Length: 223
Image (cartoon, rainbow, N blue to C red):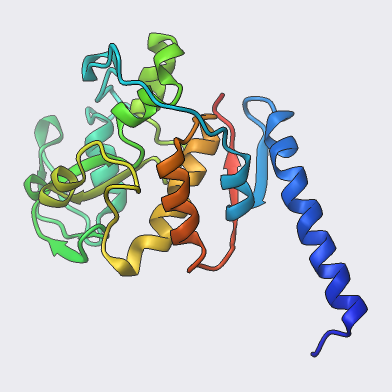
């Protein structure tokens, strides 16, 4: 249906109001609250700050812990099991045999758990740079083992994970077919933990999202 000029004006006005309210929607929410925003508005709501890696070491984020289940598997193994396209056989001490996985970063199927890494979508170093340096050890452990939000951890090929390393979207993006999902999930993860973005990161996210549908993201705040 073709909108009349007044209707188009009203839609545009509502979009402006939504954008203006986006920072408020997250700022006044508490840990455990769920917020839903168009992804570009969620990006706009993230604080833009300079980053510092001073003091970072990976051992400040305890991982992998025992996971959510009492089945002898750690968080890494739980993610591998949950994301398998074909379920692997679980042997003693949670050794996984067989199975099939899809690596979205590089559009590959892999037939062995040994060929995969479980990646923190927003890397531990990036989280440290953008706010986690001020967290408690327990908060950092929770971040490093987050199975409550499926966007936080992802099973991908070891080669793609190591190519990405600790870089943000200003310096690394996955294969083109997965980019919209990747940057949307990045914004959701940073929203969930109230992490900041730096100037180049914000620009890269905004530029990529300009070529994607402005779909809503729903996030349960961890902090």
